[in-house]
Image 1 (cartoon, rainbow, N blue to C red):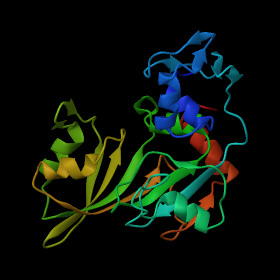
Image 2 (cartoon, helix red, strand yellow):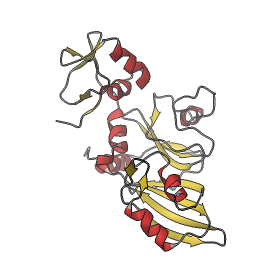
Image 3 (cartoon, rainbow, N blue to C red):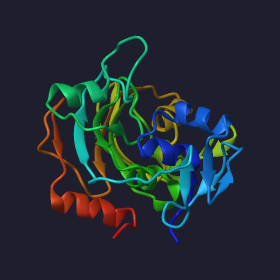
Image 4 (cartoon, rainbow, N blue to C red):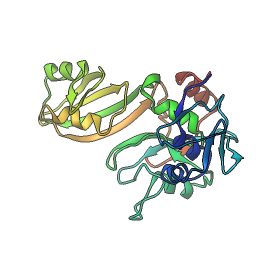
Length: 245
């Protein structure tokens, strides 16, 4: 038995279109799991044991896994496409000759730079973004003002953000300047705009944010805007981190 994932995520990973398009297939009653029509978007399936079909045709995630690492520049969206025609990470991949069907693993904000993965492997992407597997994400962070060690300690213990409390994280001051502070922050989860929101609660605006590592993979050879496939050793380590090996 494998891990269960939402049916719309599975269908998208199998190449049937965007998650929105896959949700429309479900609403129209065209999706079946183990011979039974799916009538809810929140249905969870096990890709390893369940039989999924659309219009009577079996659906499987097939083909060779393909994973790219990109050092994302500022001003580039972490999406497949943008209705306003702004540049996306997929556009960068196409410009550098990668024509495979790809989508980003998680997101980085428009002005956030650093490492983001692109892949055609929906199951790997699911594990990389699921909190259960706790693949650490390390960031180089610069905030306005001189931050105190007390504030850093409070952030590392977990703080309330709206209707949830962040998980404990790691944070240490790397350099202190007259009007700003550089820190190294390691998250064990990945909530939307989490780092910016955490520091904002203590009156410190994030002015630079760069993801520098995923787990213990750092991709230090990548210049800003550069993209390349993972080496066999890197991909194996990624699968180890997500429990796939």
